[in-house]
Image (tube, rainbow, N blue to C red; front, top):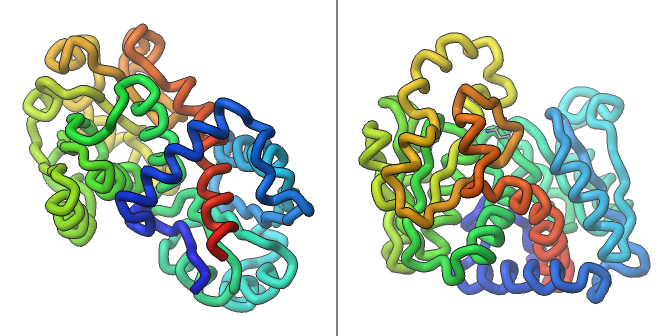
Length: 307
Ligand code: NVA
């Protein structure tokens, strides 16, 4: 069975640890391991805006000895000119792995079902698991073991980052709290799954509409844009709903005195995060952005070795 990385719980707790350790080793020595030397072609497709993802996959695949092939989804007409399944069959004959940023998780699953090669989720509406590997790698660098740490995710948790934090945090044995307005918690089925995983790992997952309760004593505060890609028409209403959940210096004051701050970027200073927090000493966002490369190299290598 070809392995894929479509959502965070595609890795068991043990496997997540293996991938994070590999990512750390690859960061220490970026050119040491060349599992894609040959070179293996990795097809990369971006149907939504991208900076960090495209840059980090391109440079990471090069460091692995592979070749990054950019496929223009609009030129290909994926799902319109030809079906996702047919695109998968074609790309699976040209590439050793496929990386896709798109809208529907179901399309990504369709790609994986027909490609015959590993498929990696580079963000969908539902999940952003590569970002979570980078987030966890960053936390490990600054906090050591992840198990038992408390994370507070503030703001719009009804998005890819909220869902992925629920699953990946639980997999890591963390206590994940969401501080989000009513109606903006992670997806109900994702919360059920995350709680099942947490039972196994000793972590926990909870949701509150009180941002201070979520942040109090936390080891890491996380936020994300209030207007995810595709939600632009709701921007004004969202700013209104999420304003009480902004990651401010005041809110950070409720967290553990050694708490750190993560944001997947792009960040909107003065909206979901105060400039003083994003640009302040507790912020790890630039390490987090760099770690996309190392973490993604690790998952590409992990899948390639198990193809
Ligand atoms: N939730 C955000 C993440 C951006 C990396 C979005 O989907 O736009």
